[in-house]
Image 1 (cartoon, rainbow, N blue to C red):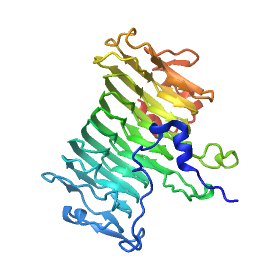
Image 2 (image 1 turned 90 degrees about the vertical axis):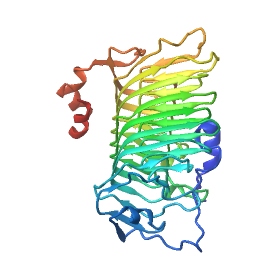
Image 3 (image 1 turned 45 degrees about the vertical axis):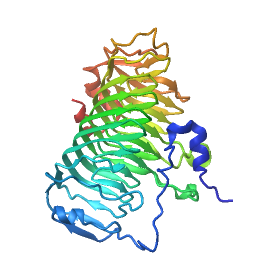
Image 4 (image 1 turned 120 degrees about the vertical axis):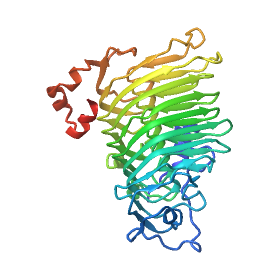
Length: 420
Protein backbone atom coordinates (compact mmCIF):
# COMPACT_ATOMS: atom_id res chain seq x y z
CA UNK A 1 0.00 0.00 0.00
CA UNK A 2 1.33 3.42 -0.87
CA UNK A 3 2.15 5.63 2.07
CA UNK A 4 0.74 9.10 1.98
CA UNK A 5 1.83 12.02 4.15
CA UNK A 6 -0.83 12.68 6.75
CA UNK A 7 0.01 16.35 6.77
CA UNK A 8 -2.76 17.91 8.76
CA UNK A 9 -2.97 15.22 11.42
CA UNK A 10 0.76 15.27 12.07
CA UNK A 11 1.06 19.03 12.13
CA UNK A 12 -1.86 19.72 14.45
CA UNK A 13 -1.07 16.88 16.83
CA UNK A 14 2.57 17.87 17.02
CA UNK A 15 2.18 21.40 18.25
CA UNK A 16 -1.25 22.75 17.52
CA UNK A 17 -1.51 26.28 16.29
CA UNK A 18 2.14 27.30 16.26
CA UNK A 19 3.26 24.64 13.78
CA UNK A 20 1.00 25.80 10.99
CA UNK A 21 -1.17 28.62 9.81
CA UNK A 22 -4.45 28.45 11.72
CA UNK A 23 -6.25 30.12 8.84
CA UNK A 24 -5.22 27.46 6.31
CA UNK A 25 -3.52 29.90 3.98
CA UNK A 26 -0.36 27.80 3.82
CA UNK A 27 -2.10 25.04 1.86
CA UNK A 28 -0.84 24.47 -1.66
CA UNK A 29 -2.56 26.77 -4.12
CA UNK A 30 -4.49 25.19 -6.96
CA UNK A 31 -4.80 27.19 -10.16
CA UNK A 32 -7.79 26.96 -12.47
CA UNK A 33 -6.53 25.06 -15.58
CA UNK A 34 -8.82 27.18 -17.70
CA UNK A 35 -6.91 30.31 -16.75
CA UNK A 36 -3.34 28.94 -16.79
CA UNK A 37 -2.66 25.72 -18.66
CA UNK A 38 1.14 25.59 -18.71
CA UNK A 39 4.07 27.21 -16.93
CA UNK A 40 7.20 27.98 -18.92
CA UNK A 41 10.23 27.37 -16.66
CA UNK A 42 12.82 27.14 -19.44
CA UNK A 43 12.44 30.20 -21.65
CA UNK A 44 13.33 33.41 -19.84
CA UNK A 45 11.81 36.65 -21.08
CA UNK A 46 14.14 39.65 -20.66
CA UNK A 47 13.18 42.43 -18.25
CA UNK A 48 14.94 45.73 -18.89
CA UNK A 49 12.58 48.30 -17.38
CA UNK A 50 10.24 48.89 -14.44
CA UNK A 51 7.25 48.71 -16.75
CA UNK A 52 8.32 45.29 -17.99
CA UNK A 53 8.76 44.13 -14.39
CA UNK A 54 5.24 45.26 -13.49
CA UNK A 55 3.79 43.61 -16.61
CA UNK A 56 5.19 40.12 -15.95
CA UNK A 57 2.72 37.29 -16.55
CA UNK A 58 2.17 34.75 -13.79
CA UNK A 59 2.95 31.62 -15.83
CA UNK A 60 6.17 32.70 -17.54
CA UNK A 61 9.80 32.99 -16.44
CA UNK A 62 11.89 36.16 -16.57
CA UNK A 63 15.49 37.37 -16.50
CA UNK A 64 16.56 40.78 -15.27
CA UNK A 65 18.84 42.55 -17.77
CA UNK A 66 19.75 45.74 -15.88
CA UNK A 67 19.54 47.47 -12.51
CA UNK A 68 16.10 48.92 -11.79
CA UNK A 69 15.16 51.80 -9.48
CA UNK A 70 11.65 51.70 -8.00
CA UNK A 71 11.90 55.12 -6.32
CA UNK A 72 8.68 57.15 -6.30
CA UNK A 73 6.61 54.01 -6.98
CA UNK A 74 4.23 52.54 -4.40
CA UNK A 75 5.03 48.93 -5.18
CA UNK A 76 2.23 46.38 -5.56
CA UNK A 77 3.62 42.85 -4.99
CA UNK A 78 3.71 40.42 -7.92
CA UNK A 79 1.46 37.40 -7.32
CA UNK A 80 -1.40 36.79 -4.92
CA UNK A 81 -2.92 33.79 -3.16
CA UNK A 82 -5.53 33.42 -5.89
CA UNK A 83 -3.07 34.19 -8.70
CA UNK A 84 0.49 33.33 -7.61
CA UNK A 85 3.59 33.92 -9.70
CA UNK A 86 4.33 30.42 -11.03
CA UNK A 87 7.43 30.93 -13.16
CA UNK A 88 11.08 31.44 -12.25
CA UNK A 89 12.87 34.76 -11.86
CA UNK A 90 16.58 35.14 -12.64
CA UNK A 91 18.07 38.38 -11.25
CA UNK A 92 21.35 37.68 -13.12
CA UNK A 93 23.24 39.57 -10.39
CA UNK A 94 21.44 42.86 -11.01
CA UNK A 95 19.93 45.13 -8.36
CA UNK A 96 16.40 46.37 -7.76
CA UNK A 97 16.56 49.35 -5.43
CA UNK A 98 14.18 51.53 -3.42
CA UNK A 99 11.18 49.22 -3.38
CA UNK A 100 8.52 50.77 -1.15
CA UNK A 101 5.34 49.14 0.14
CA UNK A 102 3.02 51.31 2.25
CA UNK A 103 -0.20 49.31 1.98
CA UNK A 104 -0.98 45.85 3.31
CA UNK A 105 -1.53 43.36 0.49
CA UNK A 106 -1.49 40.37 2.91
CA UNK A 107 1.42 38.88 0.91
CA UNK A 108 4.03 41.64 0.81
CA UNK A 109 7.40 41.81 -0.95
CA UNK A 110 8.77 42.14 -4.47
CA UNK A 111 6.69 39.01 -4.97
CA UNK A 112 3.59 38.61 -2.86
CA UNK A 113 2.91 34.92 -3.38
CA UNK A 114 5.31 32.87 -5.52
CA UNK A 115 5.53 29.19 -6.39
CA UNK A 116 8.55 29.44 -8.72
CA UNK A 117 12.21 30.01 -7.88
CA UNK A 118 14.06 33.32 -7.42
CA UNK A 119 17.83 33.49 -7.74
CA UNK A 120 20.82 35.83 -8.26
CA UNK A 121 18.93 38.97 -7.22
CA UNK A 122 19.91 41.98 -5.11
CA UNK A 123 17.33 44.16 -3.36
CA UNK A 124 18.70 47.29 -1.73
CA UNK A 125 17.13 50.01 0.38
CA UNK A 126 13.74 48.37 0.57
CA UNK A 127 11.08 50.01 2.74
CA UNK A 128 7.99 48.09 3.85
CA UNK A 129 5.93 50.05 6.38
CA UNK A 130 2.23 49.55 7.11
CA UNK A 131 -0.44 48.69 9.67
CA UNK A 132 -1.76 45.24 8.86
CA UNK A 133 -5.45 44.71 8.15
CA UNK A 134 -5.25 40.91 7.96
CA UNK A 135 -2.65 38.15 8.28
CA UNK A 136 0.66 39.68 7.21
CA UNK A 137 3.29 37.77 5.22
CA UNK A 138 6.26 40.08 4.71
CA UNK A 139 9.70 39.65 3.11
CA UNK A 140 11.94 41.55 0.73
CA UNK A 141 11.96 38.89 -1.98
CA UNK A 142 8.57 37.38 -1.14
CA UNK A 143 5.87 37.42 1.48
CA UNK A 144 5.07 33.75 0.88
CA UNK A 145 7.14 31.30 -1.18
CA UNK A 146 6.66 27.71 -2.26
CA UNK A 147 9.78 28.01 -4.42
CA UNK A 148 13.51 28.08 -3.80
CA UNK A 149 15.31 31.36 -3.08
CA UNK A 150 19.07 31.37 -3.67
CA UNK A 151 21.96 33.79 -4.12
CA UNK A 152 19.90 36.82 -3.15
CA UNK A 153 20.84 39.83 -1.04
CA UNK A 154 18.28 42.01 0.71
CA UNK A 155 18.84 45.18 2.72
CA UNK A 156 16.51 47.82 4.10
CA UNK A 157 13.80 48.36 6.68
CA UNK A 158 10.55 46.59 7.52
CA UNK A 159 8.03 48.10 9.95
CA UNK A 160 4.75 46.26 10.62
CA UNK A 161 2.07 46.72 13.25
CA UNK A 162 -0.55 43.99 13.51
CA UNK A 163 -3.18 44.22 16.23
CA UNK A 164 -5.67 41.55 15.18
CA UNK A 165 -4.01 38.88 13.05
CA UNK A 166 -0.89 36.71 12.78
CA UNK A 167 2.37 38.01 11.27
CA UNK A 168 5.13 36.17 9.38
CA UNK A 169 8.05 38.51 8.82
CA UNK A 170 11.63 38.09 7.59
CA UNK A 171 14.00 40.34 5.68
CA UNK A 172 14.28 37.73 2.88
CA UNK A 173 10.92 35.95 3.04
CA UNK A 174 8.01 35.87 5.46
CA UNK A 175 6.90 32.23 5.08
CA UNK A 176 8.50 29.48 3.02
CA UNK A 177 7.43 25.87 2.72
CA UNK A 178 8.14 22.59 0.99
CA UNK A 179 5.23 22.11 -1.37
CA UNK A 180 2.90 19.34 -0.22
CA UNK A 181 -0.67 18.26 -0.61
CA UNK A 182 -2.80 15.45 0.79
CA UNK A 183 -1.72 13.04 -1.94
CA UNK A 184 2.05 13.61 -1.80
CA UNK A 185 3.95 10.33 -1.59
CA UNK A 186 6.93 10.11 0.72
CA UNK A 187 9.10 8.99 -2.18
CA UNK A 188 8.13 12.13 -4.12
CA UNK A 189 8.64 14.69 -1.36
CA UNK A 190 11.47 17.22 -1.68
CA UNK A 191 12.04 20.03 0.83
CA UNK A 192 12.10 23.59 -0.36
CA UNK A 193 15.54 25.28 -0.44
CA UNK A 194 16.73 28.64 0.90
CA UNK A 195 20.44 28.81 0.05
CA UNK A 196 23.30 31.33 -0.01
CA UNK A 197 21.32 34.49 0.78
CA UNK A 198 22.23 37.56 2.84
CA UNK A 199 19.98 39.89 4.81
CA UNK A 200 20.90 43.20 6.40
CA UNK A 201 18.70 45.90 7.88
CA UNK A 202 16.17 46.55 10.63
CA UNK A 203 12.84 44.83 11.28
CA UNK A 204 10.44 46.52 13.70
CA UNK A 205 7.25 44.67 14.63
CA UNK A 206 4.35 45.25 16.99
CA UNK A 207 2.46 41.96 17.24
CA UNK A 208 -0.69 41.66 19.33
CA UNK A 209 -1.47 38.20 17.94
CA UNK A 210 0.71 35.23 16.89
CA UNK A 211 4.03 36.47 15.55
CA UNK A 212 6.85 34.76 13.64
CA UNK A 213 9.81 37.11 13.16
CA UNK A 214 13.27 36.20 11.85
CA UNK A 215 16.27 38.12 10.60
CA UNK A 216 16.17 36.10 7.36
CA UNK A 217 12.87 34.15 7.46
CA UNK A 218 9.74 34.47 9.58
CA UNK A 219 8.63 30.84 9.37
CA UNK A 220 10.03 27.78 7.58
CA UNK A 221 8.06 24.64 6.95
CA UNK A 222 9.84 21.59 5.52
CA UNK A 223 12.60 23.75 4.07
CA UNK A 224 16.36 23.23 3.96
CA UNK A 225 18.12 26.47 4.94
CA UNK A 226 21.85 26.55 4.17
CA UNK A 227 24.80 28.90 3.61
CA UNK A 228 22.90 32.06 4.56
CA UNK A 229 24.06 35.11 6.54
CA UNK A 230 21.80 37.43 8.51
CA UNK A 231 22.90 40.77 9.96
CA UNK A 232 19.34 41.98 10.54
CA UNK A 233 18.45 43.87 13.71
CA UNK A 234 15.12 42.92 15.27
CA UNK A 235 12.94 45.09 17.50
CA UNK A 236 9.73 43.33 18.55
CA UNK A 237 6.92 44.36 20.86
CA UNK A 238 4.80 41.33 21.78
CA UNK A 239 1.22 41.16 22.98
CA UNK A 240 -0.86 38.48 24.68
CA UNK A 241 -0.34 35.68 22.13
CA UNK A 242 2.87 33.68 21.50
CA UNK A 243 5.62 35.33 19.49
CA UNK A 244 8.66 33.49 18.11
CA UNK A 245 11.77 35.54 17.36
CA UNK A 246 15.12 34.38 15.96
CA UNK A 247 18.20 36.00 14.48
CA UNK A 248 17.94 33.73 11.42
CA UNK A 249 14.48 32.11 11.63
CA UNK A 250 11.52 32.94 13.83
CA UNK A 251 9.91 29.48 13.74
CA UNK A 252 11.20 26.34 12.00
CA UNK A 253 9.14 23.20 11.49
CA UNK A 254 11.06 20.37 9.85
CA UNK A 255 9.54 17.11 11.01
CA UNK A 256 6.61 16.15 8.84
CA UNK A 257 8.42 12.95 7.85
CA UNK A 258 9.58 11.97 11.34
CA UNK A 259 7.92 8.69 12.20
CA UNK A 260 8.42 6.99 8.84
CA UNK A 261 11.69 5.51 10.08
CA UNK A 262 12.56 3.54 6.97
CA UNK A 263 12.59 6.66 4.79
CA UNK A 264 13.39 9.48 7.18
CA UNK A 265 17.13 8.94 6.83
CA UNK A 266 16.84 9.40 3.09
CA UNK A 267 15.13 12.78 3.41
CA UNK A 268 17.37 15.64 4.58
CA UNK A 269 15.71 18.71 6.05
CA UNK A 270 18.69 20.62 7.45
CA UNK A 271 19.42 24.03 8.87
CA UNK A 272 23.16 24.12 8.18
CA UNK A 273 26.19 26.33 7.45
CA UNK A 274 24.41 29.56 8.39
CA UNK A 275 25.60 32.65 10.26
CA UNK A 276 23.42 35.02 12.26
CA UNK A 277 24.91 38.19 13.78
CA UNK A 278 22.09 40.17 15.30
CA UNK A 279 20.83 42.48 17.98
CA UNK A 280 17.37 41.44 19.16
CA UNK A 281 15.32 43.79 21.31
CA UNK A 282 12.16 42.40 22.87
CA UNK A 283 9.47 44.25 24.77
CA UNK A 284 7.11 41.60 26.19
CA UNK A 285 3.71 42.89 27.24
CA UNK A 286 2.58 39.59 28.70
CA UNK A 287 5.52 37.22 28.28
CA UNK A 288 4.57 34.10 26.29
CA UNK A 289 7.58 34.60 24.01
CA UNK A 290 10.31 32.32 22.63
CA UNK A 291 13.40 34.22 21.51
CA UNK A 292 16.63 32.66 20.29
CA UNK A 293 19.79 34.19 18.90
CA UNK A 294 19.48 31.81 15.94
CA UNK A 295 15.96 30.30 15.92
CA UNK A 296 13.06 31.37 18.11
CA UNK A 297 11.26 28.03 18.07
CA UNK A 298 12.46 24.81 16.41
CA UNK A 299 10.27 21.75 16.01
CA UNK A 300 12.10 18.64 14.75
CA UNK A 301 14.64 18.59 11.93
CA UNK A 302 18.43 18.88 12.00
CA UNK A 303 20.62 21.84 12.97
CA UNK A 304 24.35 21.61 12.32
CA UNK A 305 27.45 23.67 11.49
CA UNK A 306 25.90 27.04 12.35
CA UNK A 307 27.27 30.15 14.06
CA UNK A 308 25.26 32.67 16.05
CA UNK A 309 26.40 35.95 17.57
CA UNK A 310 23.47 37.67 19.23
CA UNK A 311 22.93 40.42 21.75
CA UNK A 312 19.43 39.95 23.15
CA UNK A 313 17.92 42.84 25.08
CA UNK A 314 14.75 42.40 27.10
CA UNK A 315 13.04 45.77 27.18
CA UNK A 316 10.82 47.29 29.82
CA UNK A 317 8.04 45.04 31.03
CA UNK A 318 4.57 46.48 30.47
CA UNK A 319 2.19 44.12 32.29
CA UNK A 320 2.87 41.45 34.91
CA UNK A 321 1.44 38.07 33.88
CA UNK A 322 2.43 34.52 34.70
CA UNK A 323 3.47 33.74 31.12
CA UNK A 324 6.79 32.17 30.13
CA UNK A 325 9.68 33.90 28.42
CA UNK A 326 11.97 31.27 26.91
CA UNK A 327 15.31 32.74 26.00
CA UNK A 328 18.26 30.94 24.42
CA UNK A 329 21.56 31.91 22.89
CA UNK A 330 20.73 29.57 19.98
CA UNK A 331 17.12 28.29 20.36
CA UNK A 332 14.44 30.05 22.32
CA UNK A 333 12.59 26.76 22.47
CA UNK A 334 13.22 23.42 20.77
CA UNK A 335 11.25 20.20 20.47
CA UNK A 336 12.64 16.85 19.29
CA UNK A 337 15.51 18.60 17.54
CA UNK A 338 18.92 17.25 16.57
CA UNK A 339 21.73 19.79 16.89
CA UNK A 340 25.50 19.43 16.56
CA UNK A 341 28.66 21.36 15.71
CA UNK A 342 27.40 24.87 16.43
CA UNK A 343 29.10 27.91 17.96
CA UNK A 344 27.02 30.14 20.24
CA UNK A 345 28.46 33.60 20.84
CA UNK A 346 25.42 35.21 22.45
CA UNK A 347 24.53 37.17 25.54
CA UNK A 348 21.52 38.96 26.97
CA UNK A 349 20.47 41.74 29.32
CA UNK A 350 17.24 41.70 31.29
CA UNK A 351 17.58 44.43 33.89
CA UNK A 352 13.93 45.36 33.49
CA UNK A 353 12.47 41.95 34.34
CA UNK A 354 11.31 41.09 37.87
CA UNK A 355 11.74 37.38 38.52
CA UNK A 356 8.87 37.51 41.02
CA UNK A 357 6.62 38.65 38.18
CA UNK A 358 8.06 36.09 35.76
CA UNK A 359 8.55 32.80 37.67
CA UNK A 360 8.74 30.99 34.30
CA UNK A 361 11.62 32.99 32.85
CA UNK A 362 13.82 30.23 31.37
CA UNK A 363 17.21 30.79 29.77
CA UNK A 364 20.16 28.79 28.52
CA UNK A 365 23.16 29.26 26.26
CA UNK A 366 21.90 26.61 23.82
CA UNK A 367 18.16 26.59 24.48
CA UNK A 368 15.67 28.23 26.82
CA UNK A 369 12.70 25.85 26.67
CA UNK A 370 14.51 22.52 26.34
CA UNK A 371 12.50 19.65 24.86
CA UNK A 372 15.22 18.48 22.47
CA UNK A 373 14.94 14.72 23.24
CA UNK A 374 18.20 14.17 21.33
CA UNK A 375 21.52 14.85 23.09
CA UNK A 376 23.27 17.86 21.51
CA UNK A 377 26.76 17.22 20.14
CA UNK A 378 29.75 19.57 20.01
CA UNK A 379 28.10 22.76 21.22
CA UNK A 380 30.68 25.50 21.80
CA UNK A 381 29.68 28.56 23.82
CA UNK A 382 31.83 31.67 23.68
CA UNK A 383 32.50 33.22 27.07
CA UNK A 384 31.98 35.48 28.86
CA UNK A 385 28.21 35.32 28.51
CA UNK A 386 25.19 36.00 30.71
CA UNK A 387 23.67 32.67 29.64
CA UNK A 388 23.84 29.49 31.68
CA UNK A 389 26.54 27.27 30.12
CA UNK A 390 26.02 24.20 32.32
CA UNK A 391 26.94 21.00 30.47
CA UNK A 392 28.29 22.83 27.41
CA UNK A 393 31.83 23.34 26.13
CA UNK A 394 33.13 26.90 26.48
CA UNK A 395 35.65 28.81 24.38
CA UNK A 396 36.90 32.37 24.31
CA UNK A 397 36.42 34.58 21.26
CA UNK A 398 40.10 34.08 20.43
CA UNK A 399 39.97 30.30 20.75
CA UNK A 400 37.14 29.83 18.25
CA UNK A 401 39.28 31.42 15.54
CA UNK A 402 42.35 29.28 16.18
CA UNK A 403 43.32 27.23 13.07
CA UNK A 404 43.36 23.91 14.89
CA UNK A 405 39.88 24.44 16.30
CA UNK A 406 38.54 25.59 12.95
CA UNK A 407 40.10 22.65 11.14
CA UNK A 408 38.40 20.28 13.56
CA UNK A 409 35.00 21.68 12.68
CA UNK A 410 35.49 21.03 8.97
CA UNK A 411 33.77 24.29 8.00
CA UNK A 412 34.50 25.88 4.64
CA UNK A 413 36.97 28.81 4.46
CA UNK A 414 34.58 31.28 2.84
CA UNK A 415 32.07 30.52 5.55
CA UNK A 416 34.66 31.12 8.26
CA UNK A 417 35.67 34.49 6.84
CA UNK A 418 32.30 35.84 7.94
CA UNK A 419 33.13 35.05 11.58
CA UNK A 420 36.02 37.50 11.83
